[in-house]
Image (cartoon, rainbow, N blue to C red; front, top):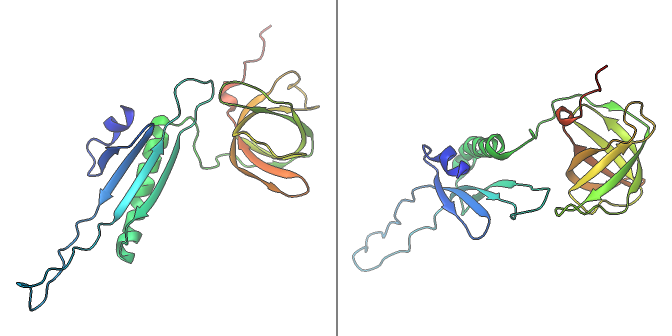
Length: 205
């Protein structure tokens, strides 16, 4: 419902797909194929349509952790001019989906600084189950995310991250979202983001 209200005034046609998928699609008008001199006797098939679309995959109902994935892409065989001009509306659609449904901004807002303290990562499933923790080391940290090296690959998209030996964080852990799959670099390095505006306020005197 939020997405329909967001794009109602747009020229992009809204198509609801199967299950939990919503597709915003714009199809470019295709000129009819020319039949040449003997058009009265032969007909050519019209060229296939082309355009761009943004596919929004909504989460299943229930669960404590829910994620929305939005992907923009071209379809058919667009001309180079159309592909270039389509970049702007595709980005606008993706930004609109993030503004309407997202809790985070994709762009990094906070500078990261090198770090070297130990961390503990608790893999978290969508139904709230927490797996056995992974030990690791923080490589970079900021007010909005961190880069962490773990001893084993993280198999989930969400986890709890605990900073070990950092003053003021004892007994606390941050809910993190993995930005990209871990890469193997002397262990497994993952990039994660989190929100500090949900941190509990300090106790008052």
